[in-house]
Image (cartoon, rainbow, N blue to C red; front, side, top):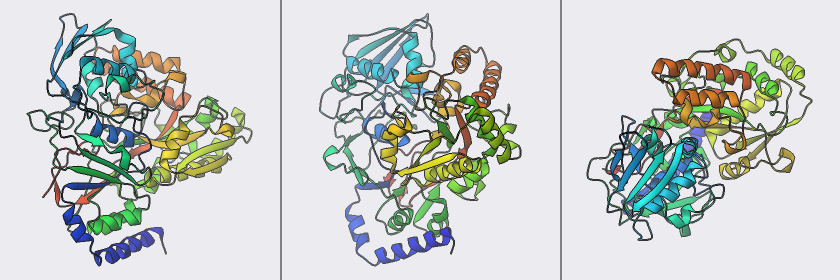
Length: 531
C-alpha cells in the first residue's frame, strides 16, 4: 500500500473514532479559545536570537513593533503615534502612542524602544545596516525617541516594521539588555497576547492569553499595521508531529487551524464541508540547502559547487508538497520567483540535465576524501524533513559519506547554532525555508550575506557579495537593482553559500467556522473570528 493511502486511511479512522466521543461538546465549551497546530515545536521564546518562522510567529503574538507593514507592504506607524524625518533625511523622530503597556503593567518608554532596537540591530540583517549607519539614538522624552543617521536611509521604518526574521520586537529595557547572542527567558512583551510560560510544555503546548491592557489602533487591521483587534481570550498552540493525528483532530473539531497540513492528506481535508484549505502565505517560502562554511568538507567552495549538478528542484518540491504544481514553483533562483529581482542569470546550473557523474568528478577534483557529512533532519517537521531526505539521497548518490541525524525541530534549532566541528556536536548541512518577502531583495536576504561570524547560521564569508549588497542599497533605480541582482546570482553559483530548492506555497487548513483570517503572510491571530 502507498504511503499516501496509509496516511489518508489513518486520518479517516482516527477522525471517525473521535467523532464518536464527546469532543464536539468540549469544543463548544471552548468557544473563546483558538486551537492552532503550528508547523513544529516552539523551541525558543526569542524572536531576535532566532530566525525560525516559529519563533517569529510567537514573537508577533507577544510583541508589538514601532511600525507595521500594510497589505501594500509599505511601512505604517504601529506603536508609533507619529514619525517625522528631518529635511536632510538624517534624523527620524518617533513619537509613541500614549496607551502602550507591557504585560507587567509598565508603560512603554522611549528607552525601552532604544534598547530593543540596539539588541535587534546586532542580529538582524537590516538591523546590522542600521548599526553601520547609526550616529546615535536618544530619548529626549519618555514618549519620544530620535534616531540620527550618518546618511539618509528611507527604508528605516520598513526595517523596523517588517514581519520577517528577525523582527524588531519591543521589549522592556531590562530584558532588551540581554546579550543578543544569548536567548531571553522572560517573555514579557508589548503585544496583543501574553505568553503563559507556566503552561509551556515544549513539544506539546504553548498557551497565550489576551493582553487586557493592549489598546489596538483605531483604524481597521491592515496586515501587520492598523488595529490588531483580538477576538479570542486564549490561543493554544498544540504541537502534533504526526500528520494523521493532526488531520484527525481538525476533522473532529479538536483543533481549529493547522498551519502545515501534509500534502498527502489534503484530499481527505478537502472532502469536508467543515474544513477550508487555503494558501494563506501567498508570498511562499524559498527552500534551500544550507552549508556550514566553517568546517570540512563545505568550507571548500569547489565542493559546495560540486553538489549543483545533482540538485533536482522538482524532486524536492514533489517530496515536500506532492504533485500539485499550484503549491510550488520551479525553477527558483536566488530571489523569490515572481518578484522584480528574480532573474535567470546562470540558472541553467539548476535547469540543465542533472548529472551525478559530473558531480562525482567535480568532488574528486575538489579534493573530497570521504569526510563525513552530518546533515540535520527535523523528524517532526514533515515539509523540511522531506527536503532533507531528498538532499541526503542526492549527496549519497554522488559519493558523499552522509550521516543523517534525525531530531525534533527544537533540538535542531539549538544544534545548528553551534560553531563547533561536527564531531563535537556541530553539523555540515541542513535544509530550511526562508519566507518570500525576506529573500526577494538583497537587503533582507540573510542567506546571501557574506559577513562571516556575524552573519546567519552557516557563517559564510564573501567580500564580493557584501560589496554587491552595498551597491544595491545605493542603486539609483530598479534597472540598476536588477543588474546587481543578476551579478549576485552569478556569484552564488560560483561561491554556493546555499542552493535554492524551489518556492513552496503550502496551504493551511482550518475549520470553516473561522472567518476574517489575515492572509498574505504568516499566521496572524488578530482579526480572526469564530462565526
